[in-house]
Image 1: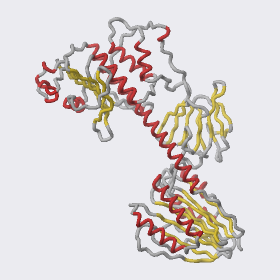
Image 2 (image 1 turned 135 degrees about the vertical axis):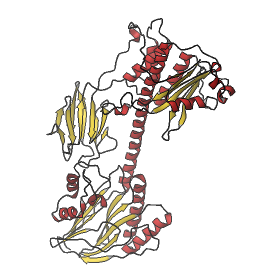
Image 3 (image 1 turned 180 degrees about the vertical axis):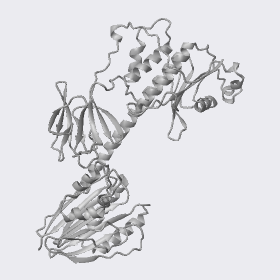
Image 4 (image 1 turned 45 degrees about the vertical axis):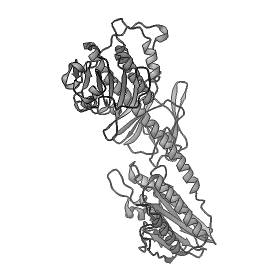
Length: 569
């Protein structure tokens, strides 16, 4: 007997409402969530660990990339069953419902903002509407299997009930545990000899995730299953149930079925249920649905036909198992992302220690510098070196972002620093770095930089290698030098030249990376050279000006500035 089942309504299990006291399932306590809103994107973050930390650091429970937020901005604490938001001395403040707060008792639907007054980026405190906690999939199965069930209810109904409860409790069990539980329970219920779960990869191909036989042994070889029926279930997006292949001529002649003497084959596609989109926009019930994987069972023995109730429950099993697997996958992806963020935080700490710059104090100039990577680690770097009474300023930008750019930035900073200390001329330093990058053949990696030498008498020697021209303010006017060279790392035989000028007291030099003048707001408009020059001329804080202009838009590149005011020798 062979059946091909299409997607049908969820079956209802017949479970007795009477259960022994020791097996009664008590739902977990409700806990609050922060609904994080960034434009059109939303993310629900459960508050299950206190203090719940908020800030720019990667290890925070809620990481805020907005430069207006502080690294350690705020935290939520629990006291006497109440929840309080505490500002941790942030530079730009913490707001609840538009009001600046230092300490605030949170109530349902409070609107929180951290540093930014942008209405498109905020968080909403919600309490009482979150998912409930639950034990792992295996623990739930053990609990539910002990419930008293009416005599006519089958083990398959137990599994359907288990999956329903597990989904409602938002089980956060590991994906492997969920899959193994599904296979082992289904084998026990159907009496099949082997069970497998195949998951769909990024390229749309099926790969074996879990395999078990009826004795509980792990199976890693799927070459002896009916791949043709597996393919049929995938392409038709239908459940294939074959309880006796010998009675179905089309199936009996298939090579894999004949070769391995398979009599019973069951394939159930596991449809995606769009858990990630719940609470936002969901697909209609009759809309197209992607397949997340396939549950496959087979046996060399024919099995009895399935009742109408069992068919409905099989649909329930496939639907609810898919939801549970998808939840576990999302949890695993979240865990991997958190682990990656922790690794980035470690890398950022190492980079910060390697590239820490102690601003030298000189009696003929005032100096300040700041760098803000758009990711946890960045490719911009600056340096300020005092050698033989002369002050050297460096600002460089490595092509690209992330780990590779950060590593190269650390190397180049060390190279340039060592040569400045050795009093190597600026043009020769550029040639040495250029040869190094070209010889190493780093692909698309190259660097731009500005290097300035300032003497106590105000004599300046300037080197520009493909970088944003410096902003020089003299006599109340903005000067943008046009002299420059090629970026470092493009042509091995490139030659480099410097140019010189004289500083007078109160003259200023500002070096910036392109993340400043190319910063964009939500309308896609650039900060631009004109705003850069006017901001410098008026003596305003560049980072505040860029942040106000961006209106909460996420930065797309690292932002670095080095500012010098010449006092006079």
